[in-house]
Amino acid sequence: MANSEGGMTAMMGEPAVTARELGRRRGGGWPAVGALAAATFTVVTSEMLPVGLLTPIGRELRVSDGTAGLTLTVTGLVAAVAAPLLTLLVGRTDRRAVLVALMGTLAAANLLAACAPTVLVLLAARVLVGLGMGGVWAIAAGLAVRLVPGRRVAAATSLIFSGVAAASVLGVPAGTFLGELGGWRTAFLAMTGVCGAVAVALAVLLPPLPAADAVRLGGVLGVLRGAPVRTGLVLVALLVTGHFAAYTYVRPVLEQVAGAQADQIGTLLLGFGLAGLAGNFAAGAAAARTPRTALLVICGVLAAAVLLMPLVGRGAGVPGAAVLVAVWGLAYGGVSVSTQTWLMAAAPGAREAASALFVAVFNGAIALGALLGGQAADGWGAAGVMWLGGALAVGAWVTVAVGRGPGRGEG
Image 1 (cartoon, rainbow, N blue to C red):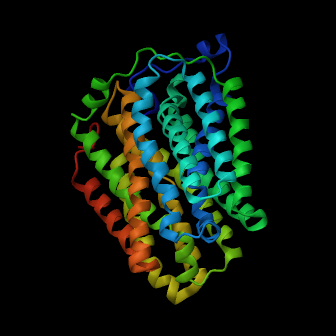
Image 2 (image 1 turned 90 degrees about the vertical axis):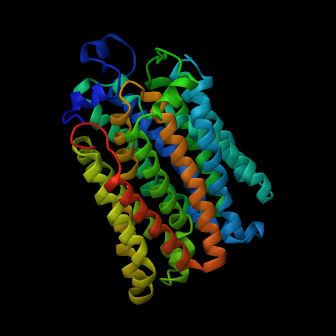
Image 3 (image 1 turned 45 degrees about the vertical axis):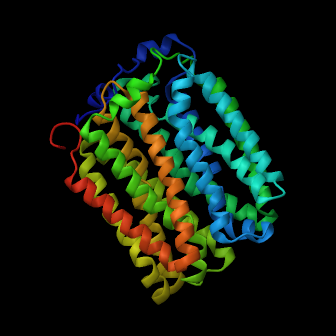
């Protein structure tokens, strides 16, 4: 892999915009990057909102924690399918227009969720969330190279992905607090307004972004011929499945294992998110140099934090659990930017195709993790989801250690 930001630009397969070109056109630059960070924040918050609300959702709709967790499973499955399909279907349509339309879809989905009288209607709303999320993430992930000069691409990419960590810092805890204050429906209603505001920001701040070439099915499938790409996708599948098998049910775990009270959950999730935000920027810089090393550290720390949670939670209570939640957040905060960097380096010249596969596998893993975690929660109890998640994270570490990586010195 390249060892400079200019090399990062080259690996993404498209010359970055120059400072002079930015000055000649409307939009672009750091305000546009900020709008994309707001978009990733919004889609991930919309996706993850049920995490801090599973207990009240299940109570009001009269379903188990495992059934309520299907709100994550459905969203992830739909996003996994939507990411590559929408990338193919939009052809050469201006990416700005596509992003604005998808953000409008998210607003409608959150409004429907806020009004859902039954779990079936809520799941229908979550299907729409999956459509919007899959498309936004697949398109936004690789746009930094078109918005800032080449030497700034690595920093801009980290900023775009900081929206993922910021969703944990602000979005999920804020949703949890709103759920405690006004009920879980208030949290979904608030997200409706946020999605609308971000849609306006994208329309105003992004420049026209016509696709140079339409992504075709052969191009997407062709990316899979590279061994480093396949290694990266297996890594994503194992690590993200493990994380979400555990994290989807973190509220029941904290309540039942560590004895946390309802009013402490938001604070604990805030600690997870703050650590994740720091992890995103630290991992972005590290992965730009050596993605394998960065991911070995991430997988190892995440596995240790999750596997220790049942032991430390029971032995040290809420304070011990709080430390592990923060360490867990620090590790997971670097997952998105590090795995995206791995795949961009593994597929030079196929930026959108690689991003589509990345988002498809990532969200399929979210769905699978939520589903497996639900089975573990209903069958083995709260501690079971931690053992399952930790075991999958260990599998991800082994994949990074023995698999073929991208670029010089990484294979």
